[in-house]
Amino acid sequence: MALEIERKFLVLSEHLPSLQAGQYIVQGYLSEKPSIRYRLLDDSIVITIKETHEDGSRFEYETFNSKSSLEERSTFKKLSLVPPIEKIRYRIPFEGLIWEVDVYQGENEGLITVDVEFPEIGYPLRFPKWVDAEREITRDPEYSNFNLGKRPYSVWNGD
Image 1 (spheres, rainbow, N blue to C red):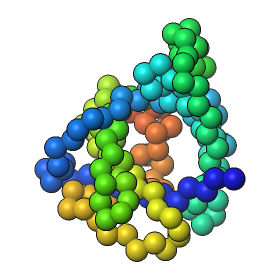
Image 2 (cartoon, rainbow, N blue to C red):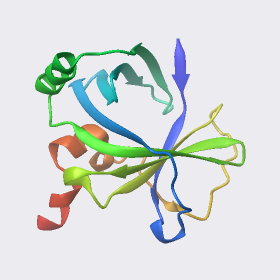
Image 3 (cartoon, rainbow, N blue to C red):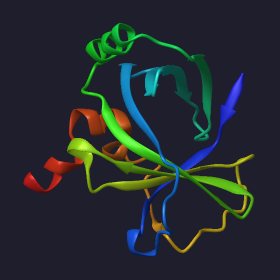
Image 4 (spheres, rainbow, N blue to C red):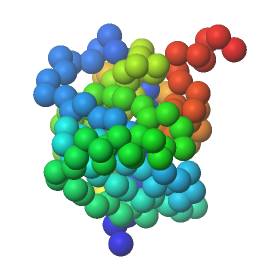
């Protein structure tokens, strides 16, 4: 069983280094609890099942189809519980960890977040200057990718 320990923050975009070699991702959900999501990456499909534990860690299982058809990708989009989100992911190494910066597209344009996965609970985290350490959104449901599909970032100020 894979265990994921991850935290998510907002980004101080004015301090962000130049972003290179991003991966375009279309991400949708087939189930909310447990979370069953798919990611469309070029011609491949990654399906991930996640269940959150009380301590914030998560069970994670992933399976990968490296060559999917246009029909398969289209079917996943149709099966989504909420409209799929689009983002470009950049991987930036810092202090021995990989920080994954997501620059959201489409209806979530303007939102930039960063996830960092670390080896154990209580791991001493040091922040790059472009991470807003005061704005942790790990447990903020409004920023979950599922909820960004349901209620995109572009409508937040319109409430």
